[in-house]
Amino acid sequence: MGISCRVSNSLSGYAEPVESSTANQGLSQALAQIEEAVRWCTRNRPSAPDAIPKDVAEMVAVLSTQPGVGAPARRGRVKGARRVNLTRVRYDIYYRVSGNF
View 1 (spheres, rainbow, N blue to C red):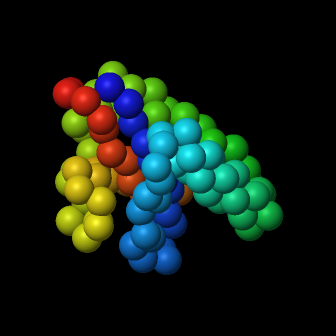
View 2: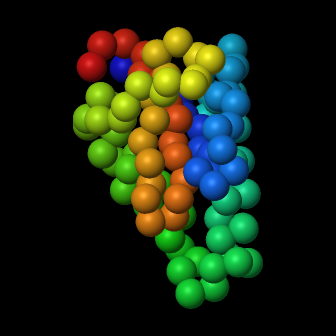
């Protein structure tokens, strides 16, 4: 089982899912999106600069053991995509599980 994911800011609306030919490309794009969100948070939320990496890490840990926890992404264009919301930081993680869960 593998998980590919992407992150989008809930305030900016739905973000296009990452489509890649390999899981590594999708992971690289997701990590770049997380890094961009962390830079924004560091500049604009100085009282909680570690909020995004902390919340993302916690959710990835949950997803690694309970991949079905997210809701099906209704507006997604990638078949089987799921979404979890990081309420505190108002970001969504879109992901797709490969294999059975």
